[in-house]
Image 1 (cartoon, protein in one colour):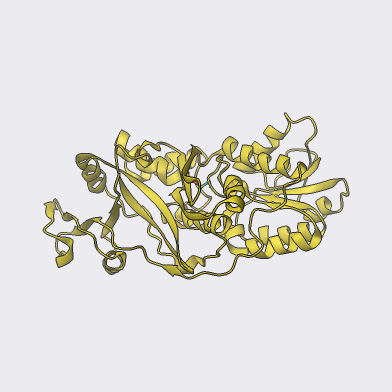
Image 2 (cartoon, protein in one colour):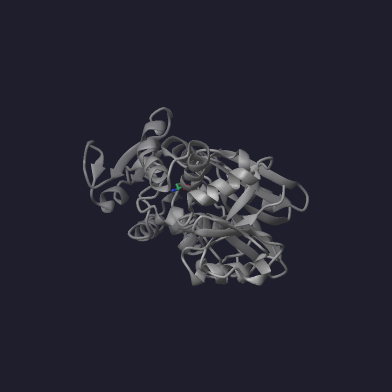
Length: 376
Ligand code: HSE
């Protein structure tokens, strides 16, 4: 099977290396700006003109020109495999419809969970079961950072630098730390598992860029690990969904997710809750998952999205308990309880409150930080 590889960054380089060990898979051409190998080119046309290439693997990231290249590849009758969550969460349905029209495959298993074969499993589970809920820790960069801050006492900037140096973060890590990368993965999990398409702008998303040592200290003192969690649950025609930091009890499975690991789970009416753990980011784990798709295609796998995947509205979650940290001058709302002083801040653990009350408070002042207090 001859492959055209688009992009030779962290993941693309890993795909090329791992593919060399597979006897009947050959990376025939590579699209890359800087040429270090004879098979490299700057022009996608050079790849699409090569009739021996039957599959395009995209690991360049970003929306454009990845989208245009995906369309050209599928139009030309090539299978298309990608790890690009931004691309698939924006154009997944359109690209799959195009792939179907052209009679070729479109797989994106590495776009959620890095090295974890989560989406492929979820797609199979959906066919025989009714998936009720999906979620988990879906970003390796932020998990690495939060774990490093809590267990090694690193500050935020040092933790981010390490995650970048290890090849976990996006080129612009804003999408990692602000929760957007997690959000896009949640959109894919909901679509693949629950046959509904969510719009990015409808889902409440709160990341970890505001986290301070005080929050980590509170977690430590009260027996929690701070994690960035995604959640989606069927609620009639709608989906209740969010991405937000959570204080996870040390005995919970989330607290055991350390370093760049992820934990993606789904709950089916029949199978109950299944949890999938592994490296959620990084060169070789993600490349290995890309190659799983390549080999699955060779064995006849074609699509991950259901053909019928209509838009769905988003509901907020029911009332939850929250950890809140506010600047000392900012009045603590009555619903937040008494709270106590922590240097320049006041912290509180609330009773069950509607998430919108907490979101509104956080939108008033960028020095407010919150995290859902997760039950066991
Ligand atoms: N930046 C992403 C993460 C890469 O940290 O999870 C894998 O999708």
